[in-house]
Length: 147
Image (cartoon, rainbow, N blue to C red; front, side):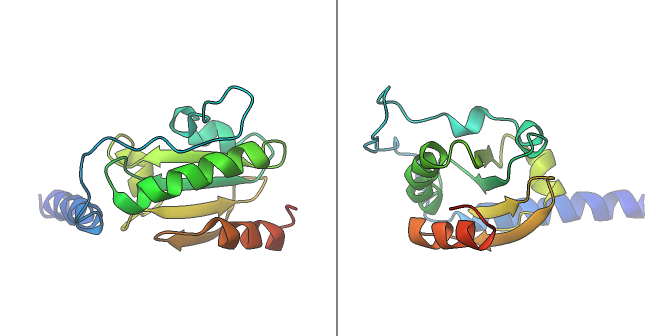
């Protein structure tokens, strides 16, 4: 009973930390960013299963976030642009933490947004917490050999 209570308490604290990280977030509708793409529509990065991306043989950039979190909203168009620009070299995935609590726990996400780079074999290379500019992400891509 004591272990079960400790586990429940740990999960509750993790949820509180994720919720607190998004303090100040609101539920207003996302503004639609502008994209330069043949279809004119951004890729749906939340529909790509992380396991599928990690087993594809390409490096993966996964962001753990929420559609109601302001920094996460600011990251979304950057990630969508990167997904288009690096389509043949990189998987880009957005994981909604409240929809995928199993992955949130598995990767020990305590603050959102958290971005994790995985190599082509699915091994975590590095992680970043908070807003990450496109320029900084591209610099990290170059460090792992993606031009």
